[in-house]
Image (cartoon, rainbow, N blue to C red; front, side, top):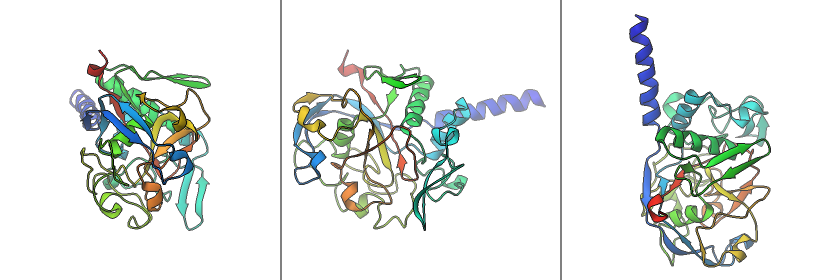
Length: 298
């Protein structure tokens, strides 16, 4: 009996791993105007940026996809190794020990039928480790190398990684070079994403709202998304006519984009920027993956 059951379990794990691979969309790249003239001070000045062809995941990484990574590697997240994560309840945002990627924004264990919701309570480090695992599964080069007190990222590697801030805004703007929309797609925010006005104070399954013109979902709202870049409030003044900008060389916090279920429309604009420390995690932060198109570099 064991000779039959064990192979079946291995095949089941393999099937789950394959099924958990994010669906990627090929984006042409090009030149566009980054920033927003009427936005916050860190959204100016407007500047011209060029990004080469790249791939971006159609949706945010789901809890089911992240579970496949955990089951395959035994990885423990920063929330599990540390003191939990921040949740939202009647007391507002506060930290609770014992919380991790298996939990909802309010600290309850997520029912398995809701594993198509974006994974929450994951840090930038957790997201980068997930990207390396995806690269291993696909036979691609790892982007991130981890050291005791730092992380190095090779953006010329062909593996999975977090999108750069420029790639993220290009994708959210549907690749439109001028007169881009306020939110990620055509229409009202209510039709495009989950935010404080319609989310009922909770995260929702991915791809339930209208996609943008590139076929990407939830870039406005649902969860904040980690980007590859270090954050610098004044960085835009240094990047006019930059090609594939990847953010400052170093910093204290990493960029987050897109807004979440708990934010107003102001924070869900495609030009809006914020940041958190790389080990930060809470019930409104997730991520999606990207990778370079090597054909434009070879």
